[in-house]
Image 1: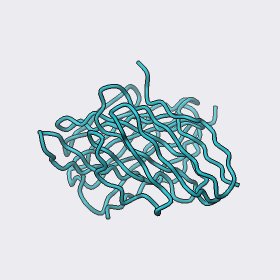
Image 2: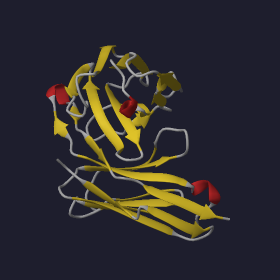
Image 3: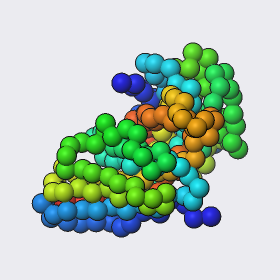
Image 4: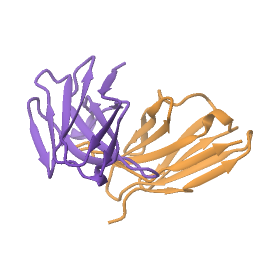
Length: 118
Length: 115
């Protein structure tokens, strides 16, 4: 099956620093998703990417869908304490179903634990 | 707007007991997913439904686990009999699959402890 390698596993940074994390896959995806999970909560979708080469921003967050369709990165600029949490990448290979619908299994990375020191 | 609703939020049970976890997806969504999260294995997809039909249950650990989606607004994940190794946080997620859109929205999870 498809495997995702997410790195780094954890990061300890000072407030104000920029953060970068990435995911690589053994096979292609046609959708990349980035989620953030805080303690006691479910993952929350941050950014969704649908095209190879696509670069998308959401506030201080920027993510890119790699040209090879096998990788993606997430950058956080000027980190703040509330950025603390676990960040997950997820890849999906969509398949067309009946009636114009599409579906596909989502594979999650292992997560990057981000700690921001004030 | 209400997000994905899961109940109970916490469940503590003894080994051998039956456990039923419940999920109400976001209204209008046509896909529903059950995940299990542990420190050792991370987020694992157990099963997902599209238009109430199970599409992929290859992640269901064993016959003790079963999931149903009797209608578009409700799903259950049942473990019978439960074992200590089933202790984990179980998430339900839903999405609306249309074209390229397949963004999953997660519920708050059910923390299951089997003693």
